[in-house]
Image 1 (cartoon, rainbow, N blue to C red):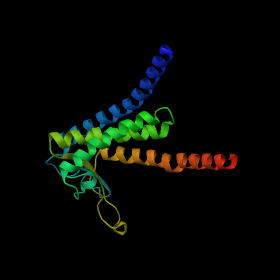
Image 2 (cartoon, helix red, strand yellow):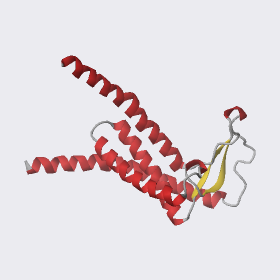
Image 3 (cartoon, rainbow, N blue to C red):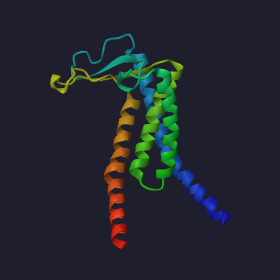
Image 4 (cartoon, rainbow, N blue to C red):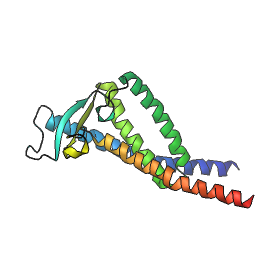
Amino acid sequence: MGKRCAKWESNAIKKLLKYLSITAILVILDHATKYWAIVALKGKPAWPQDWTFFRFDYAENYHMIFSLSFIPMPVANALAIVAMGLLFYLLWEYKDKHVIPSVGLAFILGGAFGNIPERFIRGYVVDFISFDWPDWLFFTRWPTFNIADMVVNIGMLLYLGYVFLIEGKENKSKALNEADDA
């Protein structure tokens, strides 16, 4: 029994490390692009200057995602650390179930590890991706963001899409089958 348990733990850790490697790649990509933004864009005009829809534009975000400022930053940082613990727990729980929520959670962790250290070290996050939307979308300029912000949103779509659209239907179907059997 001891060998069986050790083998299961080894496989579980390998699966977890597979998803955490996605997280690590995203963190490296995020920090590399932020470094590029600091070197290439800081103190300079947006690039390309003649494009109106999309451009790279250096910005320092002293608030939360998309410059939201309704929560004080120390509270937001504390909540982010607690959320990261929850994300690790969820990743451990989902690693054997399905790839979609696991990849989604790995993306969210990648975004968190991209931005949180910057907030503690610099006091702000470097943003540099900027889009201009038509006026009919309630605002003229989307908040400037970075790779970490983008992967958090992609991860949320993957994870919540799975939980509500796939897992929710599976649970409902399972409950109906159990009710029919009773």
